[in-house]
Image (tube, rainbow, N blue to C red; front, side, top):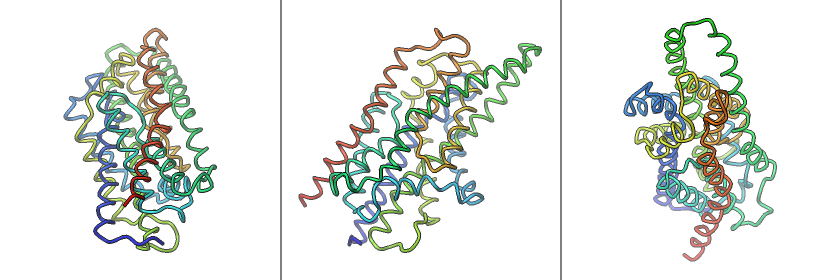
Length: 337
């Protein structure tokens, strides 16, 4: 157990909630890019819609407590929880927030999830060396970097093909009206799954901090007040929007129809709900980007702007190393005081 004055504990929890807010701000595009790009909803209405479903994920976890497995992975599945100190948590959060701000300012849809994973690994290794790393949890997360966009892309293509066949005899007007409604439903499902998976990452950080400082004991379990605070923070972040990234996600990678928007959102929500059930802190950014590419490719490969997609992929590759380096640096800075 590591001693920490209560005001400093409160301050560190507020930093964690600030990361959660930034996560919502940074990843708002993931939830609403398709509905904005297809003009299904106005931007202001879209962010309110997404924020409401982000927070609604809290009630889903009350009904199904097993869906809090992602918080367990972040809190005790990457670094041995007995080695996590307040300084490690601080370094992890600052590393992730730094990378989020840089990519947000540049309009690059990188992963907040993997920025946090990188920050945690960098800060943890700086504190305890490689022996503190739980390689099973880390490898599971690294594999998800590749699998989540790939599965999202394949599922979106399958949804496009199946629904094209189902609506083959429908008039264009009937099909368009149907896909507008289906797109709205699938976008709500995606926002729900986004809140479910992403808010838990901050829950895991705050909960392991409370255990490491002796404020919680026994089995690793997220307190209800922590869960509520995290869902509120991510919903408020989503309300604040992230318009540069929305442009990249919604229209610069590929132009979207209602049919394609529905297919991408549905595919993405399936991947995220599955990942949450398995306790994998998957990247919502990677998932929806793969799904958008899959929906665009299903019409024709030339519809995808591969140069933009390539820049997005390059940002993914350097996210974990960059945030790990910053996390380690800020941990080392705390040792000077």
